[in-house]
Image 1: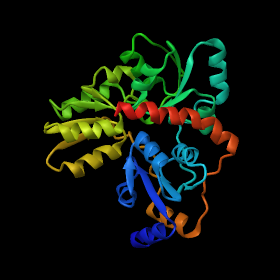
Image 2: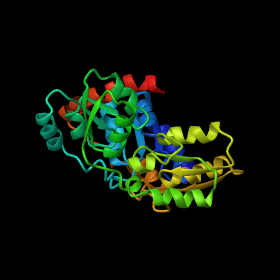
Image 3: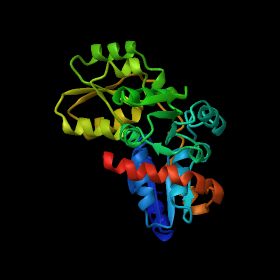
Image 4: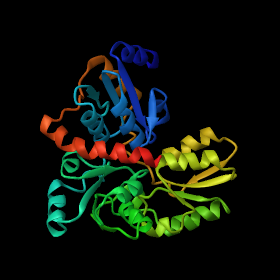
Length: 302
């Protein structure tokens, strides 16, 4: 089936992209593997006619917005993001009415409609750099309150106005989980994603995006690491560093939505078609500006 997928992709001039949280067998099919920022950047640069996005709905929407004339396929159309569903355009409009001088910064984990009413988008790897580059002191940050709190901690001269959304996978982790992991691997650095709550961030030795956590392990020589993000990253790092020990902060840090895509889904969407992402011209045009600004500003943060 993998050979057939590669042949179908070649014939259709298709690139297969996969998020780090996808299962290993799906990632093995991909031409591009990365975090949200890397997938967005590469989608904007692609020369292929078709993009097969192995991830969740908002990621496929981003690929379509950045490539309005290309075909974007989502192998598992029911794969969504609970965080992306927590805020609506109406929530943003209400916050703007309360804070008319504030810029609106939306996390990439959001719908196309939310991006359309925002000034700039960001990912976890670019949020601080982009917020610092905005001329506004006040910044409405939607929808992830924890990433917003992280940005605030790094930029005390800014006033971050958070929306109270969260990623359920990261938000439920507590300081007791950090303590238990430290008992399991004494002396191991704790690396957490900024979608974790501030109380957990304060217990960490390093806070960073998925890509930054992977890079940290690749660049350091510790014998063990405690990983505070989706469990697939621990699995990936175990394979990459078989002589090191790893533990995830909680076994519940598993995103079922990201695991919905199967190899068979990639094959089916290439062989049979369907599951094409569709947005109106008005939707794409309205959302394009904040994504373009994210890539322009965020590239300098890497």
